[in-house]
Image (cartoon, rainbow, N blue to C red; front, side):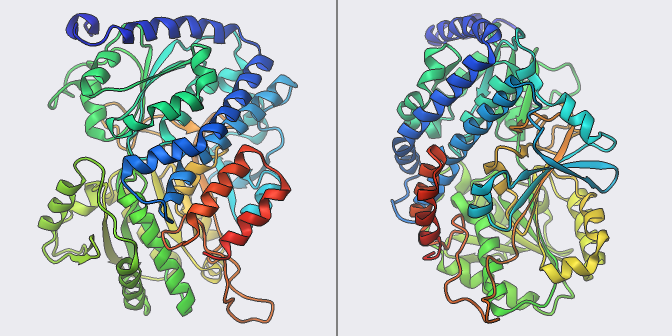
Amino acid sequence: MTDSRATYPHVDADLDTAVDELRRGAERWAVMGLTERITLLRRTHRSIAAAAESWTTAAIGAKDIDAGPLAGEEWMSGPYPTLLGFSEAAASLSKIASGRSPASDLKTRRAPGGRTAFQVLPSDLYDRSLLNGFTGEVWLAPGVSADDARRRAGQGAKRLGETGGVGLVLGAGNVSSIGPLDVLNELVAHNRVSVLKLNPTFAGLTTAYNAAFAPLIDADLLRIVNGGAEVGQYLTAHPGIDHVHVTGSRMTHDAIVWGPGDAKGGSPRLDKPITSELGGVSPIIVVPGRWSEQDLRHQAEHVATQRFNNCGHNCIGGQALILSSDWPQKDAFLTELRRIVEALPPRTSWYPGSEQKMAAAAAEYPEAEHVNGRLLLKVDESTSQDALTTEYFGPVLAHLELPGAGTDFLRAAVGFSNDRLDGTLGASLIVAPQDRNAMGAAFEEVLAELRYGTIGINVWSAFGFLLPGLTWGAYPGNTLRDVGSGIGIVHNAHLLEDVERSVVSGPFRPFPRSILGGELSLSPKPAWFMTAKSAREVGERLTRFAARPTWKRLPGIVTHAFHA
């Protein structure tokens, strides 16, 4: 690759200065002891907390949403998971500093296929209170023992003196914590400092980011830059950049690696390593059962949230809803889903290019239902199959049917997802407890065949993104020529090696029965549901709690959740 400074001589020379300063910062990080690293991460945690409100306000402005319930999305997907990530990273470094494995306190069990599963949620009494009924596990590749995994955990944090050089993080433009958490992973897991190049959609967050991450910037471990594609191209080709990490589309990845057009037959244009997270068509598999009216309503809200959160501009947004053609309640569920979508707050697509993608979907499926500014479309043998292979990245939800019930249906849905849908980033399953129990051990055996990087059971797989102890990224095995949903993982606060996937589970419905056996009139609704009226209040309170966890802050969170 040619020197980008010759190719783009008119690009601001400040970028060269930034890279030079970061190279000196990388050398200082390499010789920095664990105690000093922990102090720096904790100081950054405090500065994120101080900037949380301005960060959220800027994200709300970037997406042109009001300060009502939808603002809760920006609290919960911005400063909140970032605070959790920095806190957990500091905790893992503290364990290493004391001579322990960062996975030393985690329970393990045997998962199907000779796999070891590390339980990372719940991790403490706070988790048990706030996330009652939720569990999260990291599954390792078959054949890796728990003892060996604990011994090897630590990644770059155990290799003091090593430098990963300077990396370029090409930040996503849809969720404001993605870039910062990628920077954290680069620093802690790979001893690599970063230029975080913001997507133009988030240019308005620059001031808030600079305040939030001032300790890292002052230590020459981070520089945040703006600009269009030309700045990204300049930095990607820069001789001072040692590694690239991109969150975006497969098209963007391939343009970086291979150049414009279809040049995969030759050698890569990029002369440095690249990791990536690239999305795809995520399935929502609904296992048929006998559901109450409340169950139908709750899960319809759940599905609507998985697709239409953030106006559908999510790489992990569920796009392919897989139902059983033999489910007696299939039509009732779809009717409830239409009703929920019709009642959702109106939302204007704000991500560049989304209107064109939505128009293309409507043209491909002329029978699609237009519901409150969103598209619902059915896929079968007589229709286009485009919805199975094209990530619309907008408010478009496809539904399709497969025959069967129980294990037979689940196995068919898993095979369909693996073989027919594009990408392997995340998949979600919805299954009532009695139906899962009826499948016995076969449920997890079939689950192990589902080749996705994060699997959510009765919870949107995106929930795994919020939890720093879980891993985030495509199912392993992709290559530069066939990159799928990307290469590599991020987050992984316990710094485990040989990761295959993460599995997060939630309750089918939160507190569905009272002690008298009837339905609760005031049941808390997950704050991330689009139908949660108190989402802003809960999101802000969760962020304040993540900034300084105390038992005094819990009642306010719970109280607002019960008024969802």
